[in-house]
Image 1 (cartoon, helix red, strand yellow):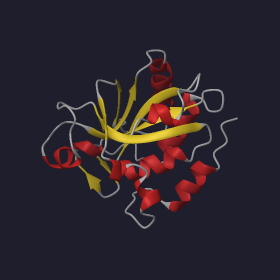
Image 2 (cartoon, rainbow, N blue to C red; image 1 turned 30 degrees about the vertical axis):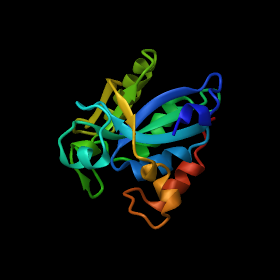
Image 3 (cartoon, one colour; image 1 turned 60 degrees about the horizontal axis):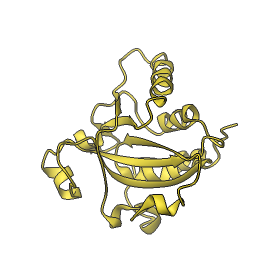
Image 4 (spheres, rainbow, N blue to C red; image 1 turned 90 degrees about the vertical axis):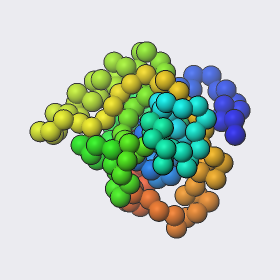
Length: 180
């Protein structure tokens, strides 16, 4: 699947990579946010090339289940996108979201545009002020990313009763999020 072709290389579309537990629910959640143009699930910032789901789950590859998010900054800012993302995760949980446990379920923000780092750091500083314990969200430059197998793409759309650590109420909240 070539997601860049899906969005027709739209001018002005930006990309951010967000890891927040199982990528099935994170993908659906993020795809509902107004201003998100397209999403794709995959594996990021690991030690191996072209990992499979089985390898990521059982072979200590170091990859995080991640959602590649294409968004239109004229419709939604990165700051707002991150705020909505934070609402779907437990920002204090290390290597875990919901019932999913392991380093592949760690929470992370991976950027490709250096200019995004200031926005990311500012949003994390703001989020940290709400908690007395340190956040468990890594913010790093994207080192590598490999699309997941086709059966993982839009998984919850293909399997409406599939497992998800994000509640239906959160999906509805994402759908109605107002970036302006």
